[in-house]
Image 1 (cartoon, rainbow, N blue to C red):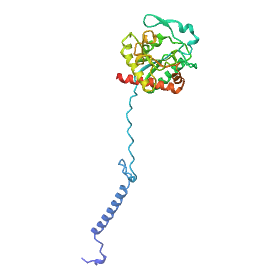
Image 2 (cartoon, rainbow, N blue to C red; image 1 turned 180 degrees about the vertical axis):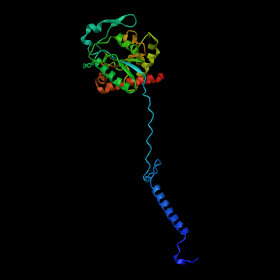
Image 3 (tube, rainbow, N blue to C red; image 1 turned 120 degrees about the vertical axis):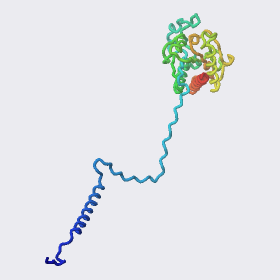
Image 4 (cartoon, helix red, strand yellow; image 1 turned 135 degrees about the vertical axis):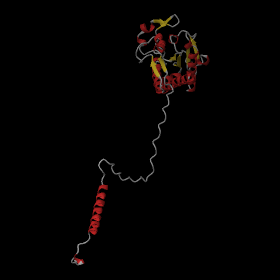
Length: 290
């Protein structure tokens, strides 16, 4: 067989295969890099770049709301009875009509009331003090019912006033008045309870109510009446008290013919002080019941 020179022979096949393998490997690597740079279909999205942590002080946590405290007179229903009415003087037949006194007898439906020497009327005084007291009591959570809704009507009669506390199923009745003693030296407040009591509420519960109201008036700096021991009067003839079926007290807050007391009743500041004392007395009475 004739021989061929080495320079003219073809290169060996294994070298070619190795070269092709290296090229294929480079293609696979490049493809993998391209695939890894974007999310695969259906796969998780790449995590966002984390925000740098704040360098300032951490915010303070929001303060926890304090629990709501119950109002001191929540659940208490008070009937305030502002004595007399502005229209009584113009309706004598109506106010003089006989009604039951609560003890089997009769008495006049209502009266005109008294006044200071300068003409400031009891009905205006009692109405103003009652409205001021109502505002204070309601601010403490109490429910308040007034026996009259204005100061220019007639009545109501004493039997209706006293019966209101039972009609509306209230807890307590305070009837607000001022006295009209002819003696100008007579001064000060006093309370009246029904005696002898016609039901259990008119007994010790009413006396406890009277004690709380009298103490509050004293602590407010008012002068107690010297006409009654302990500034407490007992009467059987007051229809407002006799008809009450809950603890009930009639307050004579001042002597309107006395110069010092008259000045208090005629001033808005004095009437506010009276209202605050009545509200304080009811708060003390309610607290003692718990």
